[in-house]
Length: 284
Image 1 (tube, rainbow, N blue to C red):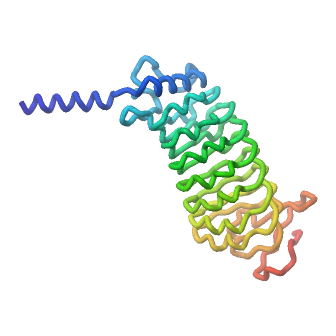
Image 2: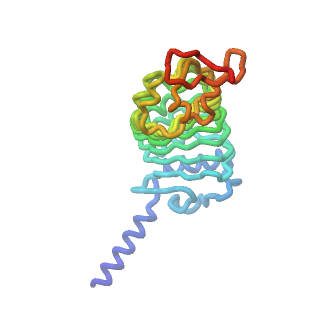
Image 3: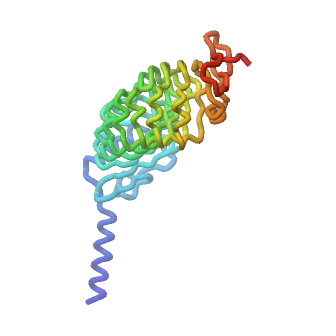
């Protein structure tokens, strides 16, 4: 009797592990496969096999919770049907050749914790619906051709720890709401076309460890409040149009020692001093 019970449990758990997802979720994955030239992927899917056996797919409780297809030669666009993966927590399509835009309604994926679409050929704006992903911790969209402004409601992502958007064509000012992200540890906005000032409200970002605004068009005084960020270990805000004076402590943090561009496009060093009323710049 004991052996029969054991056999029954083995069969039960085996069946549970192989339990497939809904037709809607399977169709969404098939659409992803078809719209990104699945037949040319490095590691392909056997569409006749259970979804649980497909490369890069993780299923839990009969729902797809992760899609990991980084560096797998995806060529094409992300289909709108991706939003039908309602239990999705991680979407990693890093380093492929995905073009087109980020699906407008991607914010419907309320369980998302990690969204990595970096190192592709995405264009268009960052959908404001991303700000509805209240569980999001890691947003990486760097090395694309994204344009437009940052969503004004980005501060709604109260659990966000990593925001990496460097090497795009993002314009406009940093939204005020961004400074409310007390969980943010890594903020990489370098090599875009951002303008405006760096607000003194940056002092609210108490968890910040790495700040990069390198190679933008930002201006105004470098906020002294940066010195109050006790966790800040790495910073690069050079090659902007910031002016004024900076303390030695801030200059040491900056990788390029506060090298800015003046109105003529000439590289200048901000003067490092403890006297905040000193000369504005020194053209060393």
